[in-house]
Image (cartoon, rainbow over all chains, first blue to last red; front, top):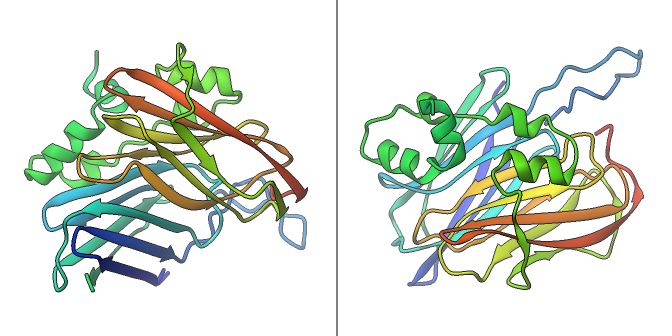
Amino acid sequence: MAYPMKIRANSDGTETEVKILMSHPMETGRRKDEDGNPVPAHFIRNITVTHGDVVVLSAQWGPAISANPFLSFRFRGGVPGEMVKVAWRDNLGDTKSQEAMIA
Amino acid sequence: MERRDFLRQGGGSLAAALLGAGWLTPAQAAEWNRVAFEAKGVDVVFRLLGAGDATASGDVYVTAPEIAENGAVVPVTVGSRLPGTQSIAILIEKNPNTLTAMFDIPQGTAPEVHTRVKMAETCRLYALVRTENGFHFGAKEIKITLGGCGG
């Protein structure tokens, strides 16, 4: 799967606000499809956001984060032109990593 | 104590530091607390996270709508005004799995995160904060018109 991600990182001169919209089904494993067959669990378990070499946020998730997860937070520092990287790994071992430039 | 337990219980920031220093690969750092995520009940999860003695605090806040029409997408902000906040967890009282997320907050990152969660039914959503002085929590009841359990 391609799992495109939208990342926005905006500096106000002191802090950088990061907004991330991920593409992921976040299946709980409790749902059935139209034919009544159970849909296997498929959800992001680990996510890490780095600014340069510094981890600015990391998280463990369960399947109750909504499908196509949204996440926003702020960290001190960050200069326009620098990069923020978001990486995740799901319960099936799929991974995705994407960068965005701080504006 | 095994290395894995150590990383789970208190090593988040250490793992982040090691990762930053290039001593751990991201795959090694990608620990997931299966026992806590598969547990049911706020008290049980608190205990599993070492927060059995957590105290209620007005400085730990949950910002969310009073009524959410769609339980599959409930926007929520959890945050802490306590100094030295190291992590924030989200627990949903009546979900099939209580623990929803655990965020490690490194120094320099604001102790507030916003995300969207699924809620099976009307219940309280807890924010559990770990600081250098122990665990504290805040909670808010959110009414769900249409449950998001299946989603």
